[in-house]
Length: 137
Image (cartoon, rainbow, N blue to C red; front, side, top):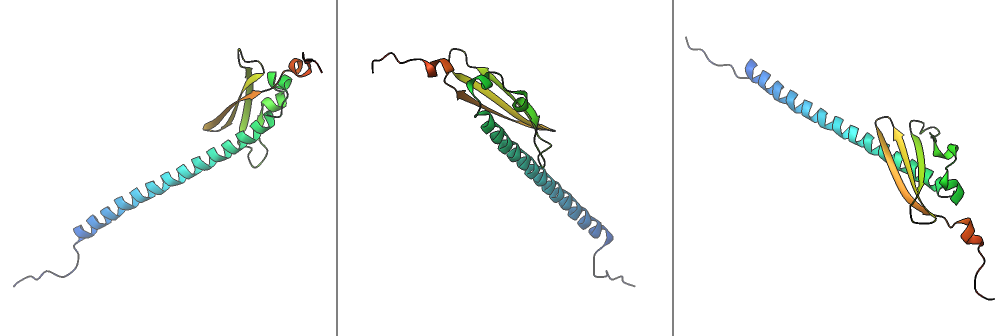
């Protein structure tokens, strides 16, 4: 009596094929997860940057005296909804040897990260604005 092999797949071949498909699927899902995390991080950073620029624009309107001591309401706080997960702190320091020049630092923070923004602002002192000219009329 001769035995003839039946056409089809053996159990071992099916298990190997499922293992290959499983490994490929896990790799693809990990890649998609990484892409989603990267997209969320990029969105958060873009929102923080926009909020920092917005807050810095407010600080740029301050007078020379206000820049020397930033009012508490502008020095720190939280943003209104829908951005309540972000908070900011602002500081200023006069640049040594440069009259009227102030370095302003602003940092927008959220759970797990922060976005710093720095700039130099020049404000003409009140004395130099009101000083009489030495020339003749």
